[in-house]
Length: 272
Length: 260
Ligand SMILES: Nc1ncnc2c1ncn2[C@@H]1O[C@H](COP(=O)(O)OP(=O)(O)OP(=O)(O)O)[C@@H](O)[C@H]1O
Ligand SMILES: [Mg+2]
View (cartoon, each protein chain N blue to C red):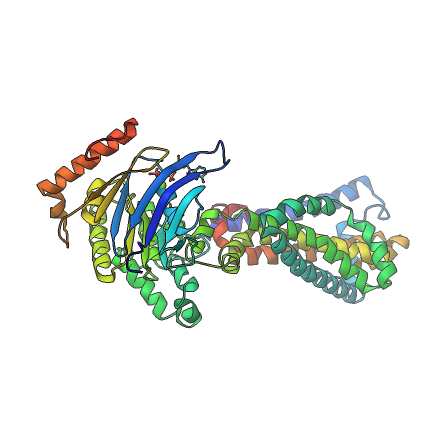
């Protein structure tokens, strides 16, 4: 049990649409993530990062290859997953608070208590999370009354509220200004250190990857696969200062170069 | 709600003025061209008859309203159930949708004699006719609403390990509510058509029956009085469903405020 990684993708291929002529999104992708790890996934746009998250979440089945979650076939049922989608899909018929409480309505053990606690304890929990990401007082608003960045933060709350074992984040800070973003990095790092959950973070921001992750996986352009798996050895807790240290700057530089090469279509041979 | 009240009030005032203007024009035209009241009675004559015969007309009004509401309620309940069945799976939707649209184009008048043969003349065929006639828009709309639910919303729940029923209750049905209400507004008016149709063919009560008899007696003013009662009931029930729609699915109409 100790040896089974939480997530294991082996030689996964994903083709959208028609099995022969559809878009090939992933080829021969392999990735192992241990329990309690924090992995960042970077790569050019359209290379299949969101596809990997959907595979792990069980929303998508691979055309070939194996996707194991906790040693078993991934199918949305096995373990508690929190997923913040790239587009914060907030349901317009619910208020922000109700949107954030959706996981509590579905996932055990909260599910059984939902009817009893939705007005009291659970609503307070949702409000506390909203306050933590700087959205205090927005619980009663409707999704269309919030800006894109505010919706992203609310979506992060929805991914976290049921304290999932596995957190899948798809560019959760993409629409935020750099100050809010750095504040949230800190919150996320703290949360991860406190709970010991496993995080897979998709991002375009290499500083973000270096700040948060234990490992950064670089993907090739479409059809995607993992080109490089760089460890990020800096001690925790990291702060914004960490990302300006010379070691970190050179790591970011080398990541940047790998992605640039991947975009140009030439798999990098560096460190290989 | 978001509009200044003034604009709304002005719109209401305009609607009322158009209505009054219509009756005025009607009255004046009848007077000017000396139209016989056997062909087209003047509004004043009609309202006079309506007022004088109200004690006689009232039980029939109640009967028609009762029949329509019962048929409408049955139609909506079975329509929603059918719509959920058709709309909750892609296969059922693809198979049943063309059939539904085909069936809904059959003129429902044709079913009245069949119901009369089965259940005899009276309230039952009227209830059934208004039910049959109001089922179709509800089924078609509910099925469309369910089938057009954004997969992104469903994914939010699926990730959490939600069952099909969870998804139905928490995403598909709320998402389909605006479609349901749009169909209710159509269905309630159609339900009246069904009732009156059946009453005028096979009943001894109801506004449809009154109008039938009145037209046999050349009491044209009474026919028009019946028409006005039907119009008032129809408009009131339409307004009621529109009001409930606005309260329940306001989220879907935030941009088209001025159109409701
Ligand atoms: N539902 C879909 N149907 C068909 N093709 C799809 C679908 N979703 C994604 N694709 C294709 O798969 C490829 C990978 O998409 P994916 O969303 O995983 O990219 P991404 O790495 O997340 O990109 P970005 O950084 O821009 O979000 C893209 O080329 C896209 O065109
Ligand atoms: Mg993406």
